Image (cartoon, rainbow, N blue to C red; front, side):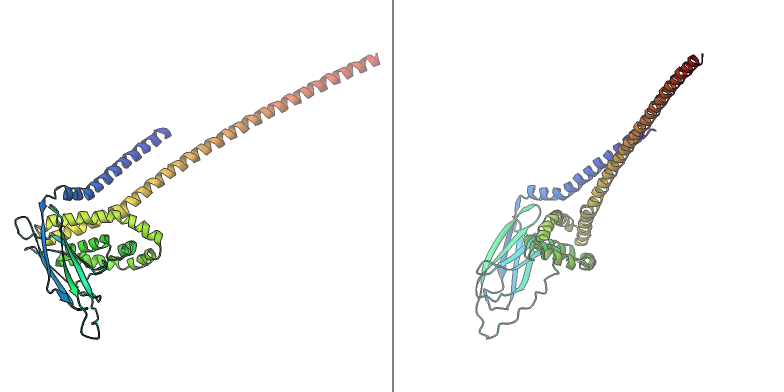
Length: 348
């Protein structure tokens, strides 16, 4: 096989691999986006959500318990519906946010500590589940001044989980919707059972061994925050798809749902953030190496042409020198012959 045929065969193989990689990327995008499209297109049945607090008014630092239910159109409890709880203070600032899943009877509850500012607070509950339209409900409660001269110290909510610190640094707040949703899928879905908690704990051990340093870099640079918000967009799509997968499998087994959702998110994250960049880098390196080889081959051909030209020039120069030498010898011979004939005539 000639060199040209070999290069052509390698080029065809490279093009074939590139086509396969494009098909793989399209397949991955389809896996990520299909659940989102199904979620939006199949949302037909209407949900309803009820919500209440254990009291109508509280003092700063007092414990608040929120309870409610998510029901379908037949007033039956909806299992593993996602409920987002958000509390706004009198100025509209978010002071509490949490995401929880309903029980088999459609029941949910949330606990948090009353803020220190006096006034009327608004509590929102948003319920959603694949196959249903989202629904929102709201109530109000009051914070009144305490008769005690000392406001009780606010204690951390025992239901709070470790945050997604890289996403928090990128979006600037733990209360950002993207951060809240990722934390909800991780803690309230995948870690909702013993096996899921074990998987999440193993992941957290690895994640928090290096992420604080990265989060500090991101938090101190606006450019890095903007870049990481863009880099996290595929991850957010993966998290939404993971929630869909979990909700589908959870009707069969919560443990199986946690395992499936965890490995689904892990595999897609590895493919998107490790395998694809490495594959693209390999393709770029191969393209550059082919370019350098062609350039080197072209330069070698140029050198060969120059050498051949120099050789021809040398031959021409040698020929010219030999012609000049021969002409000079002929002239010397003619001159010597003439001189000899003249000497012979002089002797005679």
